Length: 150
Image (cartoon, rainbow, N blue to C red; front, side):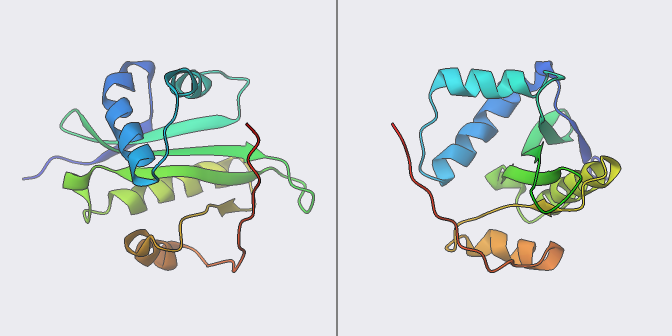
């Protein structure tokens, strides 16, 4: 009988297993995150004054997925909205419902916090993920614009 998938908040001791997932996510999006940013991001998850959170998917003591989310104010709502910022499942664990379980975990936490909305972005070319997203959320039709400052 396969081991049960556990969806839970990340804890500081997860860092060594979280890091390869984080790096896999960054590689997928073809970005390089400096080590100091990775360390700060990790520390923010455990700072009660930060609105950033991390949830992991674990089976048999091995982390198979991660999701990061944060709450922020919105000019059109009284309660903070929830932004699902990063979602990643290890290649060997894809297609097993882990991504959906992580999204649902964010939904639960957002509802418990009184947030009226969870939203996220993905690349238009991310067809595999979009198949899941089309099942668990509505496509908003918005296009993102940004300007980087260095």
